[in-house]
Amino acid sequence: MARSTRQGEGTKGTRQARSDRSREQILLAALDLALEHGYQGTTMAAVSASSGLPIGSVYWHFKSKEQLFVALLEHCHKAWTELHSGPEGLRRKLHRGIAGLSGADPEQYTKEEALLKAAAVWALSRQLGGLGEDNEVRAAYLRMRVEMFKVDVERITASVPADVVECFPDLPTKLTVLSLALTDGFYVHANSDVHLELDFAEYADMAARALEGLVDDYARRAAGKGQ
Image (cartoon, rainbow, N blue to C red; front, side, top):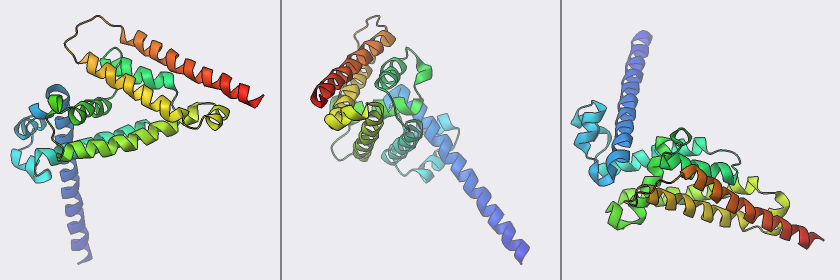
């Protein structure tokens, strides 16, 4: 009896492992398709074909395309959270967000990060994404963006001199807003019809120097207040 029970548990564990692998295959296939074709251009049938799994298996794991994309965003958000731990200076953040995302240095940017940046366009612009106010994917992304913003503020806070933060406690939040505006803007430009030969690494460096200059300016003001 004990042996039979152990065999049953082993079979159950094997089934669960297969199910987990299938779910991962589906998510990775959806990630590649979404990056190439966007939300509207990605279909459940295409995900089935790309993953090599039957369409029934795709629908067994995810009842709808919205549910699949919500799970895909959660997958990307988890990867983003693991990658973005600990302090991060403005220069590295902007180089990842501008040079990496634009393709100037693709090794600096993961597919998961790129998907989250694309989701910003889908969620915040109906004209580009076609997602209505009540769309589950849009709602899920907006929740995650709030969480990611909080993480970014914490990381930038840790990279700014403590005496500057003490004197200007809202500075890390302002720097986070500026850095996101820059990276979001360069993403839109890199995917627009304006075909200019831009050195995105150079622009990333220019943006970093501009924000670092702001920090230096606030540092001088903090020093002046302390005298």
